[in-house]
Amino acid sequence: MTEIDELYDKTIECPICNIEFTSKKVRASKLRLIKRDEDFLSYYEGENPLKYNVFICPNCGYAATEGKFLSISRKDKEIILNEITSKWNKRSYGNKRTIDEAIITYKLALYIGQLLDYKKIDLGSLCLNLAWLYRLKGQEDEEIRFLGFTKDFYKEGFYKESLVDTNMDELKLGYLLGEINRRLGNKDEAVKWFNGILSNPNINSNPMLEKMVREQWRLTREG
Image (cartoon, rainbow, N blue to C red; front, side):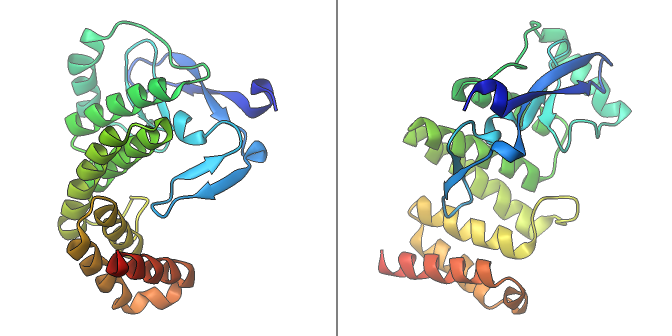
């Protein structure tokens, strides 16, 4: 499979500086899933779309995931111009990306997310994506570091935020908190989260997730 077959150019208009630029995306029709980790990292035969989820404007430096890129207020625009664009050396991440380049895009999106006061759930998801990229790279110390950040953001979000307009529901978030704690070696905390999800009456509506929770609960108890 060639790069030309797998990747295509998506044209985006930057909401900060209004220039048009292109960013690579992976054709959904070319995706061939090999396996998926218990915290939902997916592995593919060719390019992993994870590497291309963040758009970066080459002109002004604004970066965000595809789903959030265009949702920006006038106040947030001023913050970007003052804190990012004023220090930005123009460069493009619009071609095929290495894992290291993908990591740079996510770190900038995370920094901007903190500047713009994103929900903790959204910040946690950016950190989880960074942990996944470090896992793909085989850099376990950095993977663990970002899983730790993910845990902290997700936990705060679980207790203090609405999950409306996030890519999470209570069951999935609780499961991820259990699985991330398991990966971090926090056995008691992991069991607590898994038990909480299993006792949630809504778990019956998602038999696939219930099966995963029970399996990871068993692994944690036996580990």
